[in-house]
Length: 154
Image 1: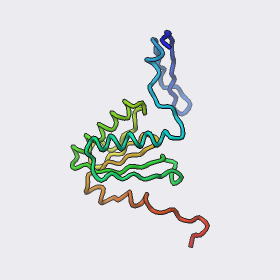
Image 2: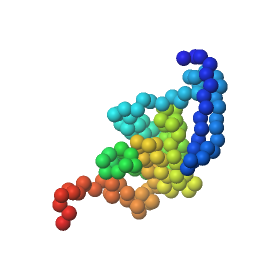
Image 3: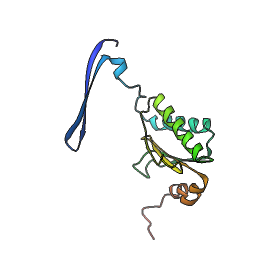
Image 4: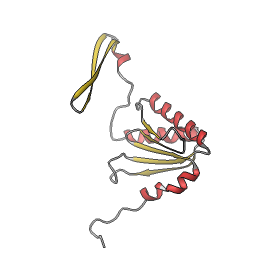
């Protein structure tokens, strides 16, 4: 640690290189701070997400274990904000917390309007709604449905 090193990263898209980035400096600066992957990585991410949402005064927080039901992630969290401004503040706070704790930059969709924002952190998918929009789509009901016994389809 602390030795000078040089790193190269190549980014590819469908077989062709888009750009190359070179880092020169101490290796501790170039290496992102990321928690080690393991069996409990998803649980640690969920714990961080729930703490951030509580800190942002999010309402009606529901977490759903989707491991085995979907390849999208291990957990889905559905939450409400009081207004579009509150939804945006919740999302900004959550994204900042995920980055600071070393979980990387999550993908964010729907941040333009602030009605329904989807944050995909990899292991945990977070839906932040205004109450009226959440009631209309009611996605937690769909994902909370009991598993169907595969042997009995009728």
